[in-house]
Length: 552
Image (cartoon, rainbow, N blue to C red; front, side, top):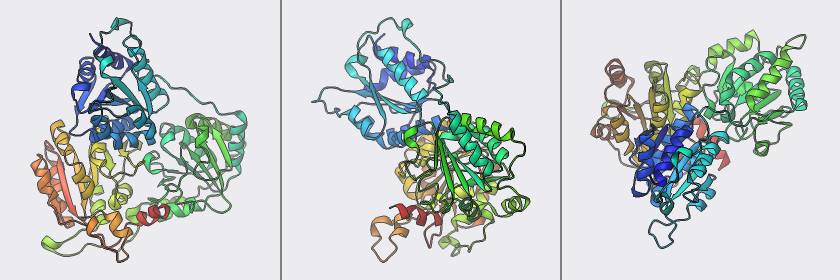
């Protein structure tokens, strides 16, 4: 057995179960060793897709995933997906073959690349320590929730392995990571703040997705309304006091109620320009508190009045218990009048709009809001929605409901288009009991079209919805001041035909009546995935786009 095989076996013993990648000569043996040791491997058509599949799988499964790539160009091909994962603190391993010979065509500074994008860099340093190096990398990804690039030098991989039976394991996949205990004084401060609040709002982010039950109890104890950042959408479904997403995707009623809060507490949430609409959702007299396990994260994006270092679930549980012990529970923001307003007007689909749908026959264009509301009614409740980036992205994010936080995967920390389809694949494999829905723009679809083959090859019963405006819509609407737009608009493309070529059932949708094809597919065997080429009308930019470009 060589080191490559020993490392693959060790990582499988550590608990690594799901691997994505594109195999070349440098990662061939370690990938095969993982498979032989029980890991499930998915071959992507491009390393960028493989990295994002691994990212999405880790987010939606709560486990460490891995992407395996060839030396040099395999890693550089995957960099955008790895950057997204690193910025999102996804617990993910990148198994990167490495050539250390500067004259090799494959040579690049791989540790330098990892450092540049915010991932942690590790390396197999020798045959004698290789399994320990691999186990440490896995443990770091799991326990510190970090993206770790584990470089696998070719010369070390090829060496004979020491006794593999003595190789250590990092522990089972569900082993708890380190916990951060909040201080008694910090809990007391939070309890005092919430007990006196008349209109408290709790906002949960990525770092609090594990704390839904504790935050729900805390909100009940102090009468708070509940909201999330976009990446935690669904965490409080179907709580009647949920405002859904805070920030650019917030409905008018949600934005009004958040802006009216006298206390806002962010749990595992950076309270950045996206979540707080560049600070406009924070009232002039609002007290802001932030809870995070990372001290350096507190106050990074805005001034906070109280910073609490601790795990979101532990802080929420301790504060809730103290509030329940009070002689009288505060009413907070909850009243019959507020509840009635939430029931009648919280959802975007309940907000009246002027329908943009235009034309008839082959020239017809459907309003993306009308399209998405119809899809929301057609698609089963048990779904997992993945959304690409672009002008269109607010429509599926705001108008498609999801059953819980594992029903929505939002790979947008790097704001790259083209990741949505791979996101849907990783999410589908992590949540196999749900219908996967990929919401893409035409630009992102064509960037990632090779992974349509992966969807078909895996037999995923996926619905791919392409919001097709034949443009990079964000730029079209952002620069709609008379500037030439030839660089960001394109001739009409028959994306339905492209889907059919990859083995999809496909449909072109120009009017609501055309969605009968979706209903027919849902009622059928779903043996082939479905691609919906929706020709959308976009006479103006989406509401969220104006918010987004305030920061550019």
